[in-house]
Length: 110
Image (cartoon, rainbow, N blue to C red; front, side):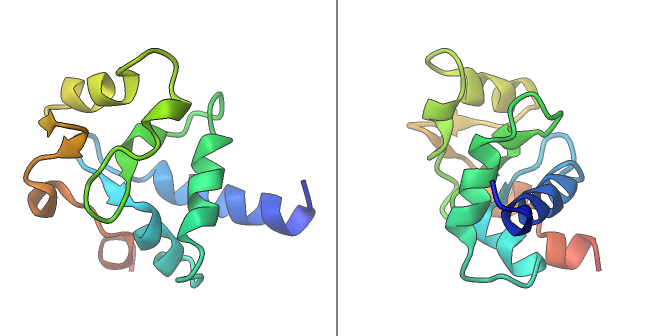
C-alpha cells in the first residue's frame, strides 16, 4: 500500500476511534472532515482494512444509515449485533432514528 494511502487510512482510523459508543457516522462524513469530500469510498476501503487495528468500524455506515459494510465482518450479522449491543436499533440492515444517533466529526471535533 502506498504511503499516501496508508496515511489517509491512519487519519480515518483516528477519526473512527472517536465515534462515541452508541453513535454512528458515515463514510462521507469522515471524508468531509478529513478535507477529502469525494473520498467516501476510500473511507470504506479503510474500514475494510481496519480489522485488528482497534477501530470501531461497525459504527461507520452509509449516508442513509445502511449497513453496507456488514459483509466485511465475520459471521452473518456481527455488525448489526455490535450496534445493537450499544443500544441502536437496526431493522432490515438500516439504523433506526439515524438522525438522532448520527455523529458528525466536523461538528464534534472542530
